[in-house]
Image (cartoon, rainbow, N blue to C red):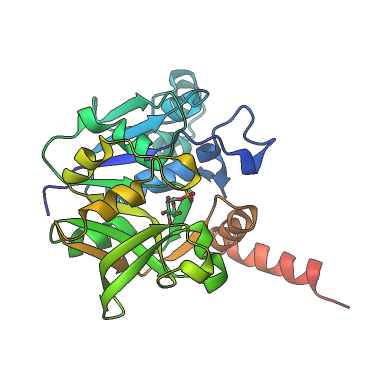
Length: 288
Ligand code: G1P
């Protein structure tokens, strides 16, 4: 699968659920421990062999562009002070010249619209899409997807409680071996009584060029937004469509509880923090 070299990161969302934190700062810059959400997504893509990074931004998202660029003053200061580890950390995240592009989505008209805004940067090739809100601890989910991908469209999926179907795109499985799900239908955010299953789309996709053609129609769907789910659904029967149950643990960092859980789980996976955090939580919250 050497063909999948580009990834789209839709980062135009307003982040209203995290106000006031996101009033002047993009929600994708919210840190999990010491790294912004968007950097985790980019690193997952790098681990999957992605070489070109396309951010679909909106107003007030400058911090993301600056984050992936040099900061000369900071680098010089770190150098002068001999802080080589910190210097390496920020230099390692600079990509090859020209590997990063920014497309502006002028109106927040939905995920399908955001992806469509990047169409001029995509040729006749499959492309990865990563939503930074969905943070995955463990192996690179996109790397697992690319390793399994055999053409057509692919989404990462996970089982969710029946009561939560209204927060996700939900798939109709035609076959399911516990790892790969063959998808014969898709519906965006159905109420539990209309949900065809409890297998939900997590924000990782590999899409084929036909999805962009479908998005050209700019049909509005659920929430009066152009839904990527709807465009993908139109492609079922024309090209293969699979869901992949990935091995990592997913955190919904678009919600406060998921964001807090992610911070704790990621901190607990780090040698420099695990013991002290665990001891503190135990002492602070255990009942006398
Ligand atoms: C988007 C997609 C949805 C998917 C979800 C995963 O929804 O539209 O199909 O299940 O991401 O996080 P959003 O959470 O942006 O409303």
